[in-house]
Each structure stands twice: as structure tokens, then as C-alpha cells.
Length: 393
Image (cartoon, rainbow, N blue to C red; front, side, top):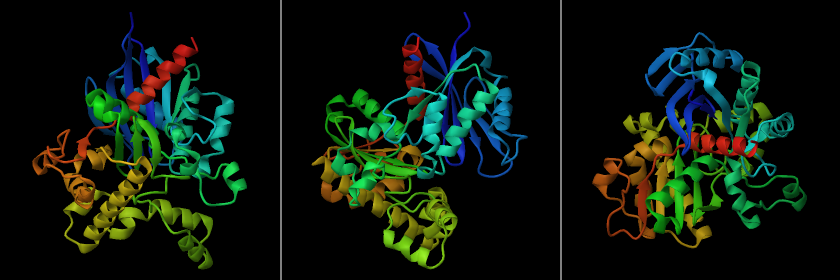
């Protein structure tokens, strides 16, 4: 019997992660992982897990339609996997608004509702929806599903979600939504598996990557998170500003900034790149001796620690912190700098464990535990897709 496959797509602002899963009785099992990198020409496609690995330049050019890019990527994948046995494709969609509180099967009405949310996530939403439409063109017979980052935070109370603006604006959707929900779902489940007693407590998860946010969990349920109405809010990121006094925006508008220029500034030229003037990549800044690089990293860690304090206030206590995503999983100096600012809360790292990227990195006598746990959004997408398809028969 031919092995049935499921393919997942995790669209970021400049990359698309592709997961390949075999469907068995115990659920989806990953058998391959690839990444399409759109950051600079030539476009690159890497298979980093599977029966073979490769890193190739695609013939497709930046700006080509996504179905052209995917068609070439699928042809390359077909050398290693039987794509004729794919039974469904699942997607991460960043913004589901208040309309979607769980995974759904893709249809025309759903796409129309999600198109309306593009202004709230302009770096990610168009890419995610574009992938769905590209696959409709290439493989129209395949069912597709969508999993939403915002859905995990629907457990936040109204007081957490509300801005101090006129009620009518809140009622029409101007509120805090939160993002990175698929990552937080995975970490909540993984922590419950590894540390079941601790997972029932009050945990702060720091998802630190090019996009970065934090989430306060109580018993594995989201109670508060750093991102709000858009993926700009919270802590500074690679190129995004994080929390910003709205008076700055009013000032820039008075200086002649239009919408496009302002959006470009906040999403693409701020954060680590803006403060350092060197690079959006924290690895480059850690390697640099320039004071601007150190200042950017100091600000990054300072804001992370401050946000942890705010989330602890929401939770009413602090039992553990989990670092995840690219920076959180692989950059000990960042974790150490954050921990130093949180020593007053009882967080103290074991220097050797932190340097080795161990799973548990807190000192044995620390009041607050600290962990490094790799996230896996693609597995969450695959599990969601299987649930949706099974419920549809």
C-alpha cells in the first residue's frame, strides 16, 4: 500500500518552510523538511531533512508568481518523495481575527474573510494566502487546511485584549490578538510531556527569532502575550520596532510621512537593524565589536526582560521560562543577558548548561526554572490538518 503523505507550509515574511509527513495510525510523522528562501536572488531551496539533502538555486526569480516557484520546488521534491500520494496540504495563517478559533478546511468564503485581515499582518498574511491560491492552481484536487496563530490567544480575557480607545472601535475589531500561537501550542504540549507538574504552573515562553514575542501560560493556556493588534507590537525584532509611543507616529505624519513610508519604516527598517545600522541578524551583532551592535542587543534583552515582568504580573507568579525559536534555542549570550535582568525574580542560569544549549539551563537551586525547547510549528499544522480531514470524513 502506498504511504499517504501530508504537506505543510509555514510562511514567514521572507521564507517558506515546507514539511512532509507520512500518515500512520499514530498520526503524522515528519519525513522531510525544506525551506524556500526569498530574501535575495537567486531564490534558494534547501531540503534539510529527508532521505537526501540539497541546497540549490531555483530558476524562478524574485517577483515570479508563487505557483511558478512552487511548481519548480515540487518537481525537485518529487525526486525524493512520491508527491502523487499527497492527500492534503496544511498552512499556517498568521491572522484569523475573531472569526477563526481553530483549524478549518479552506474554502472561498474563508479566503475572502482572511483577505480582509491583510492590513493587520502585511508581511505574513499575503504570503500565506498566496500559497493557498498557488496550490489551488497547481493541485486543485487536493484539500487544504488552515491553522491560525491568533487562535491560541482567544483564552485571553477582555481586559487583556482591550485598548483604552472608544468602545465602538474595540467592537469592530481593534483589539489585541497575539501571534506565534502555533509555536506556543507546541511548547505548551511539549512542556507538559517533559515536566507535567511544572507545566501546570505559570510559565513565560520567549519565542525569539526574526519575529519575536512572549506568552504567559497558566496550565498551558494563554493568559497574555506581547504582540497585540499587529505583529509590530511587543519587543523589538529583526526589522520590526516593537512597542512604540503612538506620539512618534503622529510626529512622523506631521513631518510628511505617508502610509507606505511609515509601514516600510516600522516593519522593515527598525528593530535590531534600525538601532545597530549594521544587520537585522543577532548573530552578526554578537560577532561585531561596534558599540551600535552592542546597544541594539542591550535594548533587545532589556525589552524582553521588561515584558517578562509584565507577563508575570498578569499571571500572578513565575515558575519557569522557556526559550525557543532561532535566537532562543541557539544563542546563549542573549539568554544570559535576559536572565541577569530577571535575577530579582529568582531566575539564575547554570553557565555551563546555557553555553551547551542544554534542555534545562537554570541552576539547581534557582527558584525559577529555565528551559530551551525547540519549537515545531509544522507538526502542529500537520496534526491540525489530520483532525480537520478526519472530521470531514
